[in-house]
View (cartoon, rainbow, N blue to C red):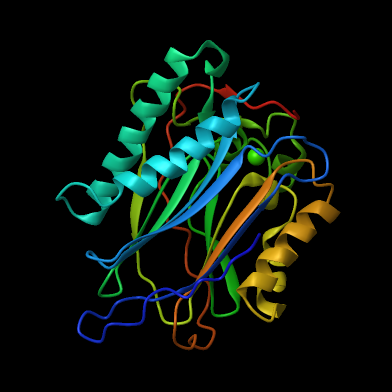
Length: 287
Ligand code: CA
């Protein structure tokens, strides 16, 4: 169920970002198993908050196990190590990848499982980073508009970038479940990591493709904008995905930074880099 814990109070000495947070997940209306998972973690000492959404793939219990493992391992690993936040994020994801792969190789019924992951790390002094693998997304809602921050590691996203198909065609393309990168599939994993420049009043949305594949960006923006609070926004987003067919598990995590948003100031450019095509990972259409 959605929850909206308000994290620890601002520390004026460090400029700590203390966002309001809400998250929720739903199996949808078609599948019998929810292979999505999400987590909210805090490292009080480092004054860091980590938000994670993962979308599992693989038959039997595989996808469910992989996404849960990814979230739990990232929650445990993200504050380990001494590097800067992006280095620690990448190391935490690489370590989770190795652990999931080991798990899959040990248990025959879990072989072939994998998961996407998208992480938002909010740190002190207004610093924030995003890291992702696969097609779960981070969006930023600012100045009355919504912008995808991550670039999907999927076949259709690559084809759109290459001009082979349009974004409209991508929404219904039969290959839209084919992702190019996942955790737990190979010994190495290529992680996209990038700094963000958060502003007061920004809202960030992490979600699985059970939302962004069924509800378009403008509708997502309108629902978050019109909701009374973040709990209501999460519930409204999940309802919208269900009304749009609910053919996939749906997961959303929202984080709103304190302070008021600035007035509209145009549309910033999308920021992620192009992903290499390294092979396809087929996700089943349904359970
Ligand atoms: Ca999915």
